[in-house]
Image 1 (cartoon, rainbow, N blue to C red):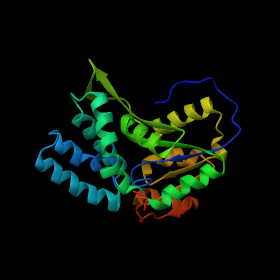
Image 2 (cartoon, rainbow, N blue to C red):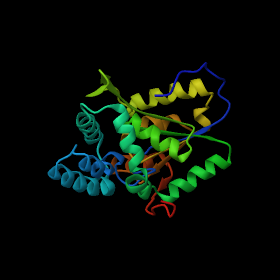
Image 3 (tube, rainbow, N blue to C red):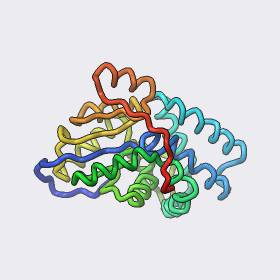
Length: 235
């Protein structure tokens, strides 16, 4: 989570991007499975299962209940690992595992919002260490992610804060107040029905590669629908 600042007057909009299936094809956590396997943190069977689920998730997304289960299992996998070790793993995975999965269309949207003078924020249910590392790499102005519990310098496998659903909206509302961001002037991009509360809160909600639950809501509400398929040529 971001550090607290004094509240500012809301005068300008921002662009909020979800990560998985919005900025990046598939799941960022599952994309790291190969690196976890190489470091002995996953078995070969678990690696195959992760690869299979990555294919399904990339194509169809996940229901809200599946998203919660995925987040919980990801945290459990981190039990005993040190935060610095995870940050090093993510940093070493940017080029081989994460950058090749970034959508070209999403990167073009980032540049458009940046050219308009809008601030950019990456907001995801993925663990904060992954989200903040990728946000820094891509020049975002900030990031919000799930905060994992750490005891005696190691992850416990539990969450202190899940950046999901209404909790994600609450985090964005707090960020907007601190940074002087007008949500009616802001844009939010997401693929998941879990982000419907956030999409309802901004003036410009956009469904990107929407799962079937979000697609139905977006059509009913007249929200723009975008389909990203092209990987970035800069990866």
